[in-house]
Image (cartoon, rainbow, N blue to C red; front, side):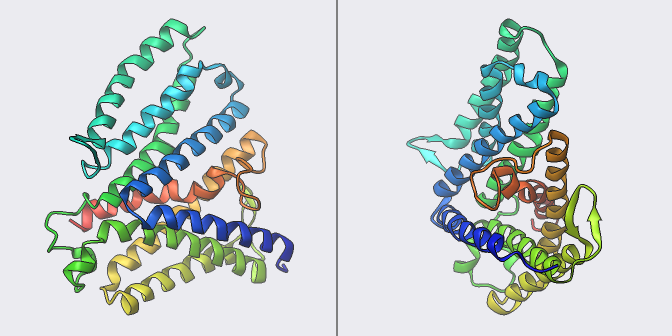
Length: 303
């Protein structure tokens, strides 16, 4: 199958703008990181609610308080995950997230009972799934950015064994970059390999995906990230091999999950914010599934 060059050029131009915005949010500091993924959080939620409404029209009848309240409750999870590393005067962002989230946990059910025309447990369950799928995942990413999952002493960083302390101090800063870079490499290589030699369909959920493209993307992703860790960062290969493998494989399942949701909803893209790439969920579907598995890896093996 030949590469569709007009589509490729549109995707490439959009990707350049997208990368510039992402890097600005990722590289400046924790505040820009939180701001970037807060925007992504609310964007993903709006698209998730539209998709769920197409699958289950009764979900469209939830009150505005339910619709926006669950987003704010999820955002509080992200604020809490900063781990007291961000403050406004004497007050930490994590404390704000905790208390507003706790208040939401009490107020949301009460308001739902008072103002909703009927209590639909399925609608509540769909919102809860959104909290797990979107909010918890992005909260764990913020937690990884803070470095708290493994950070015990600034002089003891098992993740970058052999690096100098000054470089090791940016561990929380680097880890999200490795995950996101792995996703970008996997996505790009899978598209190129699949376009050039892809013949065997991977699944009916996503007819354009092929086994050749999927495996090629995963392999090239793992090789590129591991070699970067070895030769550029002068680090041990193990963590880079593990994180790139986890990210590429879990990210592929994340992409398929969102494709399944779109097929159930009868739509092609979750949104139109990025020409050639679709919406927020189209762009971050892989990340939402890859992050929890990487967080578990950090908790188990990087402390």
